Length: 414
Image (cartoon, rainbow, N blue to C red):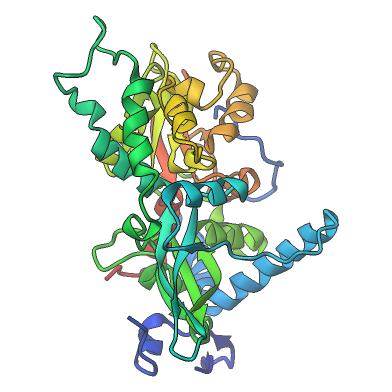
């Protein structure tokens, strides 16, 4: 598929819809960022012209998946050079016949929470065919474990303390985890990815966001896996898109100068789903999964934000069932290894502590450009919007940002 050219003789990437016709697809308190000189966009300005969204639209039409991959590879090689590590970035994969415990050990050793799964089939000629089966995600593993343990249902045969807490939760978990950890990866892996052949990497970012990072029901898909000869060769995630836009912030000018409040990046009326800091870790994850959420805010007895729980916190979930049971039976703040609560409204402590929990806290007056820079720098997946008393009033995820990009570019999600 060759890139097309517009009337100005400028090469642009193709959209997914255009390509499908040619080739069928296979079955804070205060934020801590450097001060910038850009002008904040005010309500009432023309969104299309003064707001700079025409430039943003053009950017997403011209830039392609290949551009994201090229910059990602360049940055990876730079990091390898600086750390004097000659190894390139390899995609860790799992055999479908591994046990859950063995797979978790591999994820733990590589500090990742998910990996592609393959089936190795021996052909009549003796060769081994490597066929992609899906992704194993630590979040999916724990989600299924929560359903089987049924802790939140409080069965009659489980002892409860006077204050409604489980007695000996570690012992309750051991047997359930021991059995679950013996299961085969092929029985628990899923498909949270869009698959495309390498030849389609010239699709523009507009097509990537609208047709690959959302399904037909507008449900977000967190990654696009690019394959060649049945093997995943590279992955583009939501985070990669956000970092790419942040890296080109200067080109986008006023498009990123709007405040998150002005562009409606969060809905203060919807509130934030939170849990008590006294909840057990497994119960907290169970609550998160039952609500079909990817994160929960953790609040103290005064309702102030003291932490964040997300699927990313499952990185390093122990392969030993006894150790896993002991860890998941802890109070959520102990599970997350937080030693002290955040101080009342100290602007520095919020963002120094929350990055350990894969989140940041910001004010509603922060600009989109500042938010992208902060998310990219801290390598987090969400930002909590807090009021003057440090209480959460909204949460912004990577999905929210990408969905907003689609809407501001006048793209209708199919």
